[in-house]
Amino acid sequence: MPKILIIEDDTAFCQMLEKFLTRNGFDVYTSYTIKEAEEQLRTSHFDVILSDVRLPKGNGVTLLHQVKKESPQTQVILMTGYAEVRTAVNAIKNGAFDYISKPFTPDEIVTVINNALVIQTGNQQEKVETSPIKPVNKNPNSFLAGESDSSKKLQQYVQLVAPTNMSVLLTGESGTGKEVTANAIHKASNRSNQPFVAVDCGAIPREIATSEFFGHVKGSFTGAIEDKVGHFEAANGGTLFLDEVGNLSYEHQVQLLRAIQERKIKRVGSTKEIHLDLRIIAATNENLLVAIDDGAFREDLYHRLNEFSIEVPSLRERKEDILLFASYFLDRANSELEKEVFDFSEETKQLLLDYSWPGNLREMKNVIKRAVLFSQGEMVLPDALSNEVVQGVNGTQEPIFSKSDFEKERIMEALKQTNFNKSKAAKLLQITRKTLYNKINQYQLEV
Ligand SMILES: Nc1ncnc2c1ncn2[C@@H]1O[C@H](COP(=O)(O)OP(=O)(O)OP(=O)(O)O)[C@@H](O)[C@H]1O
Image 1 (cartoon, rainbow, N blue to C red):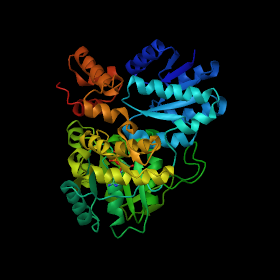
Image 2: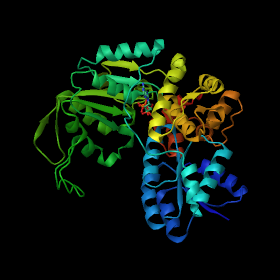
Image 3: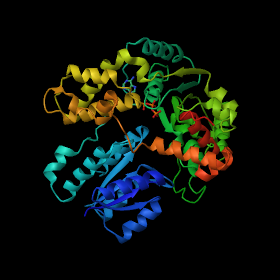
Image 4: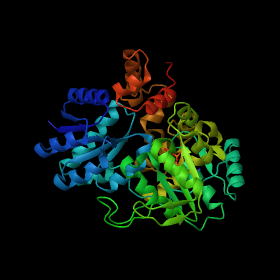
């Protein structure tokens, strides 16, 4: 019986997956943390590891290196949210077998595990046919403007603000193109031949954030074995893009505000002041005004970042652009995968137009890349599209492994248990009050 290890910190989701895979004939083990997983890996051999990308105190990619070193036969599949697909593609470069986007259907997870098992038993021929993504990323920041009214408005704002020195706050759902918009502003500005430095504020561990932003000098703390240039210094003269800015801790918000106001920084452990001349563009997919009300985001920093704000529209609001973007991603996928799939069939086009694209352009790019890979002829037929799209349009989609459903349920349960006391509920859920507020807002829970 194939032995599978699931590494997932969402306990309810993990248990549900465990039950389902056990029923389907797998010998299933679970870990909720990297540490537990490492212990299991020391004592047992697994055929397949199914790991969440984001885990407390580490991530599935770190573990991947260890697994590939100690047990190269074991196949690793990463489970990702839409926002983490980039990380997953990099992980494939580093030896992961595949990734699967959440939410996924039972069929999808069984298929990907079975594909991994075929490889695991040494059938290398199959690997070429089934590995769905090649890790090629030609120019992640190339930009297509679009022709819909919303896209035209976006372009106007980009052109309007680009030549100024104003800080820009980009809002919009995940995957709508906030980073590429920030890059487009930079390219249209007079800083275009200076650096564009993008920082994912949500991905920086709190303990090292100060040194990541401002740099450090050798010996200033344990582990500071070399001088390090921080992101501010690296972006000096150009543009610093702060993605997921709502995820900054309060302490780092204060530091950032000071740096932006005073226009100078010091590396950790140094007394030398470095003068800054840079443009800040920040992005968020959460409502910072709610975070301000909650005391989780500083209002003064918000105003500093929000000298000009642009909402990047969702793909649902750019319906007239859907086929344009689809063709653009088709071209990119053809060149990245060295395929020659020239067009979409009429039926496929209709599905692309009718689908709601919750993961926006990032989801479309991935859907089309997979479709190109799976297409045998010159045309993308509907069956090359992922089930998410086909079933989503036909109204038959039942993503029973939807993390958001579990999350919603758990949040409501915790709130009920604590008599709707948010601080207590957050403690029970082991998340911060800020995260709880964001999730209540995101799921539009009535509390
Ligand atoms: N206008 C565009 N032209 C070409 N590609 C685009 C465009 N907008 C988005 N993309 C592609 O869609 C994907 C998602 O874009 P991006 O990372 O900028 O989104 P985001 O809004 O910053 O996402 P998140 O909120 O998750 O950080 C990228 O692969 C990007 O290349």
